[in-house]
Image (cartoon, rainbow, N blue to C red; front, side, top):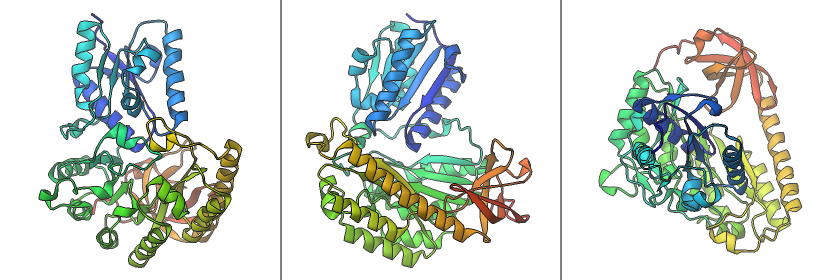
Length: 446
């Protein structure tokens, strides 16, 4: 038998979905009566919500938890949750014998039950179900941000890209009932939130697993747009094959839908895309981008790109450079390929040398930096709508435009949570700098 914890510390690694999962677990623990602390040395319970998308992320977490086992002065309960828990399961107990429980991404609702079992039995406990059941109490989530919030709409992924562990760590796609999503968003609006980001491994697949609902992703956007108080709706992540014309029209028509679409290409070569099992060619991708730009002329695009995928040639990498220059992405997450255990690509020879991968990554990053600099230069002198999120370390107000550009300007702290019209006069790296042109009339919810 172990002592029941009174305080807890949690560290989150990885994506926005992991951040939301942490908020839900924090809410569960606080509802249980535990107090959150931000110093791991003072906590009775340590939880690490982990990521498995890249080998570096896993090694970082393993190293961190391993050090705690060696150097911790007093006994705390330790739990590993998230994607690494799903990927490694009970092997974590062998590699990290001092941890007390392993909780998978599909078992967040079992957190209190697992804690009770650990405390009462004194034994190590594992819960890693392969399939998610939509029974989470999302309303218990404890959010630190009071302006914008993440809202889960679908979990899992059915695409099985050859480089990706997500289908194995998150399971098959399971959509959340639209009525439950609407209820959560209404509550967030009532609490003063102005912006929500709809989350899923592939948000565009929403509703396809539940045809009886007659509610696909674009239908959900129309329903959420009717909720008073929410000025902005974002979403991520998207798979290009599921980005439909109906979705594009919704973005153009709905006042709340931000004109920013994450449209990840991953590679510019159709041969490499086929090897990645991305289910589209470069040509089909470019056709969809052209359609989106025609329907939403002021749209900004984001992307994910992997360089140095097995067998990628210099010519094929140049195709990626060319596509990047043609589309001029506003936001890009760029990575050098790293093999992940359990994925089909891990069976192939990782034949692009690390120095070549890094050289290609730096070349692509240089293109991205140049495009960002040019775009921000062109924005100078214009006026943008900014949702004020917080104060930065220098005491300036900081927020984002509808198209995800960071903006800082001088103003009163009372403006946090409001929309302000800001005239841009300069930029520092990727952050735009401006001043309030006129006090915005958009101080109340639409």
